[in-house]
Length: 243
Ligand code: PGA
Image (cartoon, rainbow, N blue to C red; front, side, top):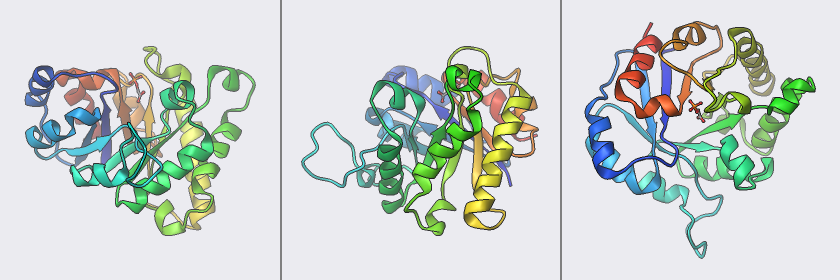
């Protein structure tokens, strides 16, 4: 299975800056690359990036209707999105998204034909309390409960320890391996077989640490925040994913 590298631009970008960044991005053989960009720039990125997949960073749990300020999964599909990030820790922490809301968003995305990139991860306090694996399992269960196996098999999962996001300090290879192996075991338990569900790692991935993380058995790629805003850095990460 080829690796999957997803750039999460977060709330960054302007038309001119995006154009310059996109000019520096190219497909990499054997690697799927997706860009998850702010809603207003989806059409621009769709028009200016060829050979890259498109995604959003959030989606409403509701279908079209009277939900002022929200964006539906159907709208994202209409604009050419294949992916949407669901349950990023910044949304869990600053926008009150609970496990239940995230589960409903993932199901809304799937119903519109999108692939949710579901983020899970523990806070520093949860790690220090020895609650890493149970936190991840609770977050995963909330998404999978009430979801048919065929839908579960379509998800992309991303392990993003909250303390590693945007801090410059990624989790160690040992820490990443422990969680990714446990997510893989959870998938086997749920799906009863080895599935093709991709498990990404996110949290301060850079060109200098990507190769070691991508070499781990159950790391199928990365979710890249800050480094995805610098074309050369992001391309260097994508090339490491190509082996
Ligand atoms: P970071 O962000 O690469 O800047 O740590 C990752 C993410 O939040 O998806």
